[in-house]
Length: 114
Image 1 (cartoon, helix red, strand yellow):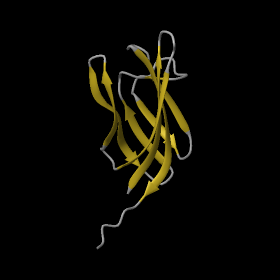
Image 2 (cartoon, rainbow, N blue to C red):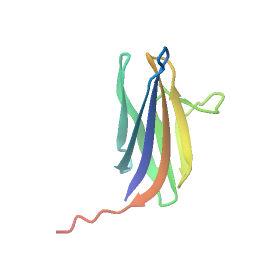
Image 3 (cartoon, rainbow, N blue to C red):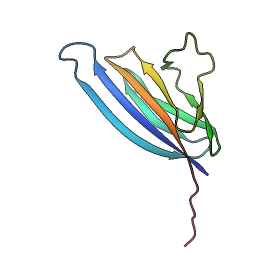
Image 4 (tube, rainbow, N blue to C red):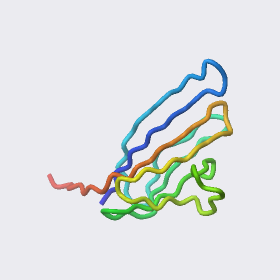
């Protein structure tokens, strides 16, 4: 069983003309599998790692470079995601501000039959 995750990445310049780049991707990942990367400003690491997945919930660990939006002080860097709900994390320390919106879309089973 694999979890399906939609990730929307918004990169915004800090100075005029305040250009924004938006990228949307869908990832199909098994437990313990990592996806999405942050590069630049001396960083090159994965952003998300699937800890567990079920048809209605997923548990995803995210990079310590990011902060969970609307959270005062995250300590475990884990998102417990219900199917269809969105979470937002931000990276504010580089040449560009980066916001990532992640949504768990459910699970899919792949048959490897010939």
